[in-house]
Length: 408
Image (cartoon, rainbow, N blue to C red; front, side, top):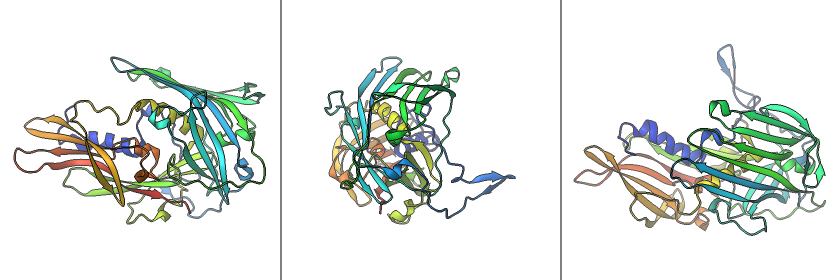
C-alpha cells in the first residue's frame, strides 16, 4: 500500500509502534488490560488525584505464598484462523504447561512449555521453545480484575476431578466483537497458577475473518514440600522481568523520542507499564509497577497461542521485497544478526523505500533477555526517501533501542 510522507507519522507510524511495543494482533481479540483502581490515578471533581506513592507490600493469604516446586497446570489448546479471500487458513493444537521450577523469597519461577499431544516440540516458531516466567508473590496493591459477562454456576469435571465453578459468557458479536466464554473454579486449589481457570474460549466475529482459540484444563498437580529448585537463567523470557526501549523518529528530521516498557508479573497477573524517557539502562526504573496495567496470566497464554498463527515460519513472509540482506545490527549494547528486507513504496514523484529488519534467528544468544513479543516483530521499521541523486534520507520509523532485565 502506498503511503505519502505526510500520512506516515499519523497512520503508518502508529501501526508500527503498536506492532513493536504491544505485539501483533487485532485489538478485539486481545485481553483487555485493566488498571487497578488502587494503583491508577482517579478523577474527582474534574481533577486527577494521584494514588499514594508508597503502599506497603500486600501479603494476605494468596496461594502463591505457599507455592511448591513441582506445582503444575496443563491445558490442551487449539486455535484456528479462517481469513476471507485468498489468505491461508491456519490451525494449531497441543498442550501448554506451567510448572514451578524454583522458589526464592518473594518470587516463584515458572517454566512455560508448549508441546504436541505426544510431548514433542511444536514447529510453530512462537511455540517452539520453553519460556521462563518469574512471578512476584507479594506486591504493592491488591490485584482484582473484574470478570466480564453473564455469570452462571456449574459443577464441571476437569483434570479428573469435579469443581465448583462459575462461567462467564461475554457476547460482543452484535457489534462485530468476539464471543468470550470463561469457566473458573471458585476454590482455585492447585490451579492457582492460572487463577483457577478450567476452560476458556474466544470465537471471533466480523473484521473480515473468523476463527477461535481455546484452553481446556487437562492436568493439575501439587509439588512436594521442601524443595527450592534452581533459579533458571532469563534467556528466553515470556516477558515479565524484562524491559525494552523503543526509539521513535516521527519525521526523520524531528525530535527523536525513546520510551521504556516494563514487564512484570505478580500472583497470576502480567503487568505492563510505560515509564518516563530513560536516561540509562538503570533497572531501577522498572521495580515499581504500582501503576501498571494488569492482564490475567491465563488471558496472556490464550492470546499467545492465537498470535502463534501469525508467524508459521521464520523469517516472516515479506511480499514484494528484495531478497533479504544479512548483516549485524546494534541495538544499545546488543549486536544482533539480522535480515533486512526492502520494499519500494509509491509516493508520487518521490521514491520511497520501506526497510524492515528482523532477527535472523529467534533464539540467538545475542537476544537473551528480550521479551518474546519483541523478537517476533521488526526490530527496525523505517521509511526512506530515495532522491534521484544523493543518499537516501529517513522519513521516520520505529526501532528497538535497547533491552535488559530488572530483577534483583
